[in-house]
Length: 214
Image (cartoon, rainbow, N blue to C red; front, side):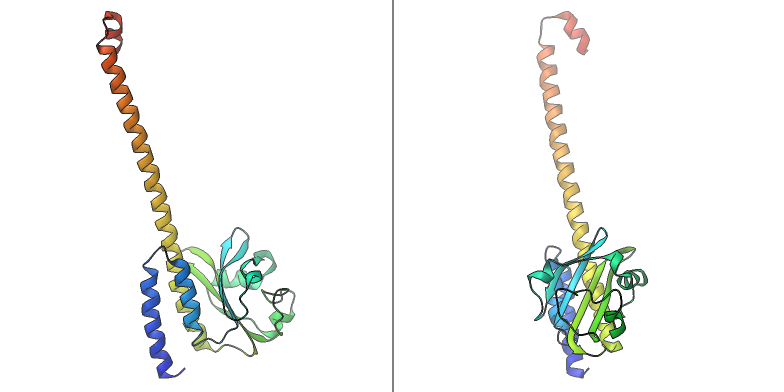
C-alpha cells in the first residue's frame, strides 16, 4: 500500500469514527466503510451479514455485484462451519480454492458465478462477548488478499461492530424510556382518579362511608 493510500485511509477512518457517534446512521456507517475499503481492498462484492437466529442475513452490500438477490440472501450457519469458526475464533480468514471447491462452497454460490480460487475473505464482527455477524469480500480475480489488507478490514470491522451495538443499546434505552413514561402517565391518572373519588366520598353525608375511607 502506498503512503498516499495510507494517509487517505487515516482520513477515512476519522470520518467513519465520527459517523459511529450518530447512532441513527448505522447503515450510513456500514455503507461508507465498505466504500472506503474499496480504495485498499479490491472487491466486486463487499457485504455485511448479521446473525439472525441460526442464519446470517445480508444487511448492506456494495460493489458491482451487489443487487437485490444479494440483499435477500441468507446463510444457514449449519451449512458453513468455516464461517462459524471465524465467528468463534474472531479472526478473519481467507477462503481458498479448496474451500470454494469443497462441500461448503462459496457463501454466494447459486447467486454469483464466481470461479473457484477467486479472492475471498470473511471478517468477523463482534463487540465484547457479542457476536454480530461477518463482512465478506469477493473479487472475480483469482488470488489471495495479503495480510495487510486483512488487518485493515479487521479494523473497519471493529468500528462497524461498535456502531451496530451502540445503536442497539440506544434503541433499547429509548424503548425503556417510553415504557417508563407510559407507566408514569398511567400512575398519575390512577392517582388523580383515586383522589377525585376520595374527595367525592368525603363530601357524602353518609357517616358509614366516611368511616370506610377514614
